[in-house]
Amino acid sequence: MYILGIETSCDETGVAIYHSQRGLVHHLLYSQIEMHSEYGGVVPELASRDHIRKLIPLIKQLLHESNLTNDDITAIAYTAGPGLMGALLVGAATAQSLAFAWHKPAVAVHHMEGHLLAPMLEENPPEFPFVALLISGGHTLLVQVLGVGQYELLGESLDDAAGEAFDKTAKLLGLPYPGGVKLSELAKSGHARFKFPRPMTDRAGLDFSFSGLKTFALTTFQKSDQTQQDKADIALAFQDAVADTLAIKCRRALLQTGLKTLVVAGGVSANIKIRATLTDMMEKENGQIFFPRPEFCTDNGAMIAYAGYQRFLLGETQDLEIFARPRWAMSEL
Ligand code: KG4
Ligand code: ZN
Image (tube, rainbow, N blue to C red; front, side, top):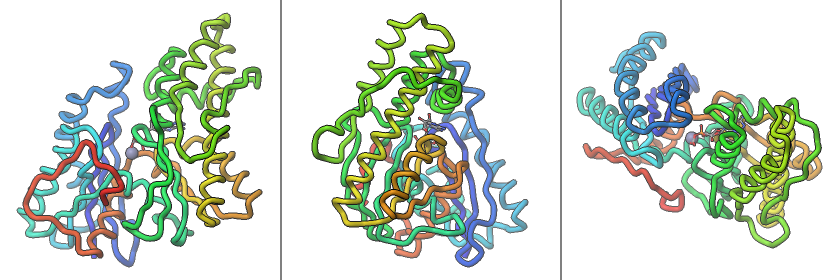
């Protein structure tokens, strides 16, 4: 069976087709980065309008390039939340309209479940159970995963999400949007000169707090000569602090659960330093670590098609309702 996946929760229009035997057939992504960069961040209304412009042409192109027609599609999966309301509504309304017109069921997908299952699209997928670290722009979650839909929250960020902290720190260093990627590029030319704290690692528990690091970066910057090198050194210190903090908490989560497998996903998992730090930690622990390929760390349609396929197998199709939830806790799944 072929599942069409649609992702429109934020600033990427992603579409994909997943097949039960063939795996991922095709995927297309249109990024709005260029449009939003003029404003230094995502402008929700512009994001919605652009999804409206791009989504149907992308789906047509996807079907055409896959040599498939709507008759071949078994179900239409779409990101129902969490995300920007207007952006979600474009995906939800389009998916439900296609479902109605094509006489196929629609499947509502939780965006973070999409991220969580993205490593399953790789050649060597992880096996359940595992601990998942989900690090995106809006969420930082440590989850014990027993199977599809069997998630136990172990820890989360009490303030800024990891990606949000990257973006805000980038902004205060004067870097353009999208901040996270720009900050990690700048960190490459940084010297190990500053030592930032590893927040909430000196006490028990698996929750995170990243907003203090942003403030630490700001005061360090204000006290410096504010040269390009200072910025790079701060970027490096900030990135190292996030990477170490994530590694400490993941190790703790593995010890607490007795599990040996770590899955890392979400936009921030594209970060090379974070991938390397977590990989080193898992080598020392004699465990296994799994990531999506970098292009499937950030938002994409492939992960939604795959999560939709899994939810379809569980019988979770929808009636004709436009279902969009900007706030939607994973614990409700
Ligand atoms: O998962 P994602 O694409 O969207 C959300 O669901 O939020 O994550 C986007 C976040 C942004 O905060 C972005 O700055 C961050 O992921 N990000 C990175 C990198 N690539 C994306 N952060 C650090 N280093 C990167 N290479
Ligand atoms: Zn995302």
